[in-house]
Length: 248
Length: 251
Image (cartoon, rainbow over all chains, first blue to last red; front, side):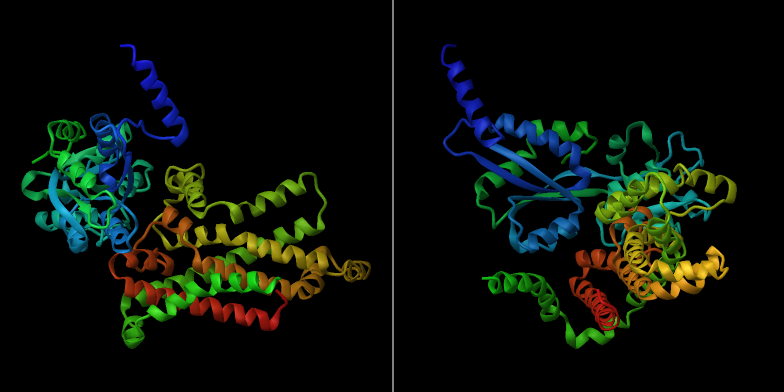
């Protein structure tokens, strides 16, 4: 294909000039996506896949606790898409988003040290005062879900600390500061061999629903809505499932 | 020529504080301040900042004296090490504390094994995190005071037969008292505002490790009005402390 080298050269020039993305259309768009921290690894791969599918669009992510992200939207931080780990955070900005839809599910598990040295059997084990248990704070989704699963199991736990997001809870367990923590099932993948997990049975567990929506204030609302719709495509759901998220 | 940038600088510092005052929910201030979780955080903040300051005085004054008076190889390196927490992001300080004093830390694992003592998730952990960040303020202030103190008084005491400890206690300490006082107040104020090292090392739990700055941060996501009230309290404390300092000591 004779024209290829020229295109490649142009692309390389664009890359060199802008430092990111490869241009092919007239308009190059960078979508800023605010996403819940539990989505980190999955969304980074989704971003690459989306760029491969829609070459004029580059996706950039900012990961944080859902309630943090909702506050960023309230404070009108410039962004195009919001993806939260719960409905409540999305509801607080209902008037600022459009085209909201559920795109993934998750559930909770108990993170423990590798090999489960303290022999945690399930949620009821967490009531043991000698066990150092860490959960998310009462206002972050991972903390609310922890409260819900403990209530379903009828277990009273006195946590040592209430952390600001799910990854911090997991870090406490990974570093050995805590013996057990309640985190998302999908978080365990990021810990690798640094942590083990004790499953929470379905009847005690919750179904976490992830929502995505385009922001009304976005300068690229069309592209933002396209990205949100694409999250339900076969390519996107395959990636989400690969990272352990069931999809609708 | 200089007035305009000076005014811009002043406005830059004052405007955010003004924002805090304007947006404060004045009408409900009283009831909000009396809420138990705010009182808990305030009590814990005052307690831990005071304990951290005492700890800093205990080790910081001797350290400052050694840095100012004892000539030993590597003194400049030690002085540089003392100031590291000043420039280190506090979160990094918290991570470092975890690696050293955490349950699996260099020293922490032995504390746990031998004494059953774990610092993360305890008020003691909060005090240590605050002391780590605030100690340089005290040391620098006291070292300056020791350097400025006239050596001849100490020499005179020594010729009259006073031991090094007596000289330090009876001559040097009264001479450097204003410097120690100023250092202690700065140290206390820094400890009171400590956030990064505290949340990283000690975690966050109401009544045990949740100090005012942590409460501000977490309230911001949930109840911004409460965050403003908490911030106002911290601001008031800072202003009172600094005003007190200015009157008594040259800063």
